[in-house]
Every structure is written in structure tokens, then in C-alpha cells.
Length: 409
Image (cartoon, rainbow, N blue to C red; front, side, top):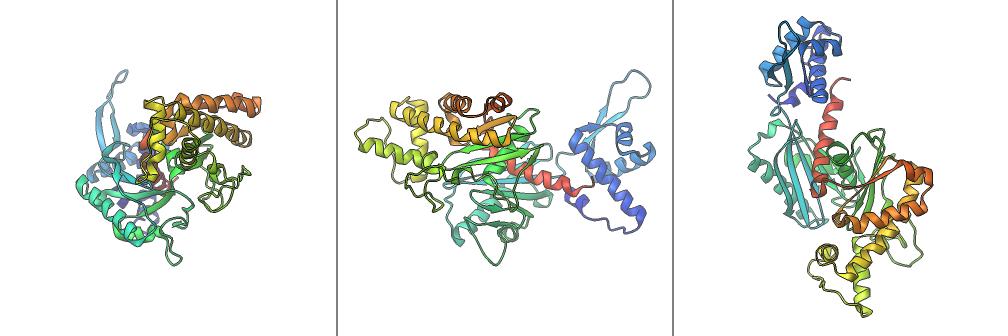
């Protein structure tokens, strides 16, 4: 039986039926958050009698929501059984949609991937054909996973740009003024669908399964083709009023006359981003500088990867120079973010994080130089540990979090 069934309202409308349904939900929610528990521990936590909890747990065992992990050792007397959530009672589907590829994964309720594919071939275009191809690829992935679709609680799809998560609209891709995009995709997948900004999902993935330890106030920097930040305050994602918080790359910083991809001039991305790096590289070559790296004009969205790999693998002097200059600038303007939010942790993710010290050291040096001393003392700087999996993991975590909020508090 799918955990989705337990999320639905009770068919018994009587007061006792509603209370019983809430107790079962509470047991599941506690086991999801704590991992394992005995009957006595559940009774104490939920302030319910041992016989009542025992009856509810036995029902959940029979229905397949809960599993008996066996007896535990104690100091004496009868050994109690330890209960846990059945990892196969619910699955979460996460999809990260990039400009030239997509990544997709299916996690069970224990956050274990039962199937994952990173960097699958897909070209993101703002067309109906591209949207249908995306949905088809997702459906094929689910079929190949051999997981019954009825057991999948929902899907989260990450896209770049302005995403109104609450209303289900993307204002950069597949925008329809008549219907929310999440509804359109939901019909194609026959699953509940949530849209999420890619950077915010990466931040959430890093918070739950990455380099974040006990920190509750975190800034995640997605430093790739574009630049954006994901904000976590008191352990929760920060969205802003309509979900557009974090558009750091489109802050008007430079008086350089360069038109940004958003249509405005002088945005941070015009000098600090993957596409800016490509332009800077081409300008340097035109000015007579030498490099081992040759850019492929047929793969424009991957050109910045070639420069990054040139610095990382070939130690190409021009690539290293350009990356170092950008990263120093990045640290300078991230210092403003530190001064505003005073976070405990700053995580650098995205394509540029592959460079490790080439990026982190200039950023750290600039942060010390330009941020307030007291603020800088509070923050730790780390590289993302999830890499290309951050968005998929974050998307799965978003679905799971939404499911948990549907359970009783």
C-alpha cells in the first residue's frame, strides 16, 4: 500500500475515526523524522497509551507502512521491538532540467536512490515539443525503474529562472498564461508535480544530504552558466513573496554596457558567470593571448565547461587567470550577501565548484577583505559535496518535505 493513501483524509468522518487516522499519521511522521522507535517511545512522544499505540502499529504493519526491525537489547526484562518505516511504501521523483541535459532520480523514503541517471541527453527549448519530450523521458525513466507509479508520492521538476512555486508557473520556460505548468506536466506524468527553482533545490539538497552539519542559516551559491543563490533561514527555504528570492546574478552591479541574458545591462552575470567566462576567453584570444583550449562553437552551452576543465586538468594559464579573476570578484560581491544575511555557512556549488581551490581561495580572500570582520568570523566557506546530484537530491527532498507537511503536526 502506498503512503499516499495515508495522506488522504479519513473515510470515517466520525470524531473517533478522525482521531484514529491522525494517530496513525503521527506514528508515521515520528518514524520518518526519528528513524526507529519502540512502542513505549511512540506512546511517550505522542502522549498515547501503549495498548492504543500497539493496535495502531499492528495495523500499519499489516498494511505495509511499517516494518519490525527486531528486538533490541536492554538491561533486563522483556526486550521490546524496534519499528521503522517500510522503505518501499513511498518514492519521490526528482528532475533537474539543464540547458543541454537533464538528471533524474527516484528515491525511497529512506533517501536511498533506487534509480538515478545524471546528464541524460536533453536540449531545453521554450517549445511545446521540448516540453512533451521532457515528459516522455520522465515517463520512460519511471517505467525502466520498475517501481509502481502508484507508490510515487510526487515529482519535483527544477528549472532555472523565475519560478512561482506556489502557483506552479515558470516565467522563463514553457510559460502559459492560461494554465500552471505543474498542472500541464502532472497530466502528462499522472503524478502530483511541483516546480522548483534549480538553485533553491540544490541548496535544499545540500542542506539535507550534503556539507551542511548543524547549521540552520545557509547561503548556497550556484556558480555555473549563470549565478544565483539559495537561502535557508532557520532550516527552511526562503522564497520571498512569490518565489523569486535568490536572483543574485541579476543584481545591477557594473556600468559596463553589456546586455545580460535577462535583457538588462550591467548585471553581475555579465562579468561573473559561465557565459561571461566564455566571452572573456574569446576576447583574450582575440587580443593575442595563448591557450591550449579550443572552444566548440557547436556546443555553446558547454563552452564554459571546456575552460573550467582547461584550468583543472591542463592547468592552462589563461583559463586559470580568468577563473581566478572572476572568483575574486565573486567573493567581493558575496561579501554583501554575508553582511545582509550573516549566515553560518556559505556553500559554493555549480560547475565552478569543480575547481576547488582555484575558486574557493580567491573567494575566501575577497570575503575577508570586503565583508565586516564580525560577519566573516561567523561564516564557514565550503565546496558542495553533492556536485551534479545536488539538484536531483534537493528535488526529492522537496517532495518529501511537502508530504511531511501534509501529515498532522
